[in-house]
Image (cartoon, rainbow, N blue to C red; front, side):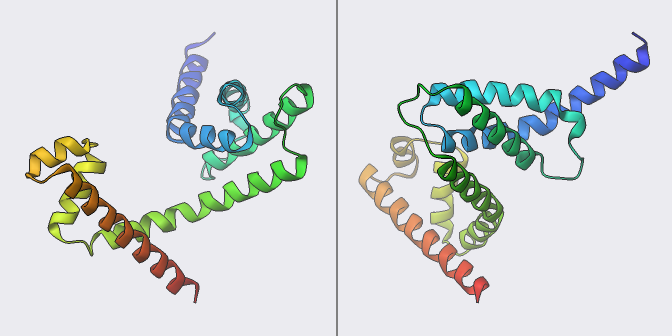
Length: 180
């Protein structure tokens, strides 16, 4: 094999794994919504990943790699269902299609919900934003947050519940206003 072919293969692998690392959790989550067990989802995810690699040359740069991977996963699931009838919980083909379409719509709306969340976070007080930062950006447990800011665990739970409620209401209000 020539050095040019080796370099091209390395670049192909590098590009694939950059896309893949950004999308693998979304593709796996998609699979989990369509199959009844995590063991089955693991097998299907492995097969999907393999097919994605083998068919990577068919992927069109600039398009949505995650959506492409989910489409491949859908066909792997359909094929898996055709080969395996032993699963006690089986979705009909129509149900599988509806679930797939619902997930796809959810993913399309996801960025808008994230944008709305970021806007709504700006409406929190400094203390509330600091609490969100500690809990979700730093992933601190409630007990550590309570010790760090000198409040009771119960008070932290109540404060977070208030923040969650405010953010949910704010996001829903903003999305409803957009739809008008």
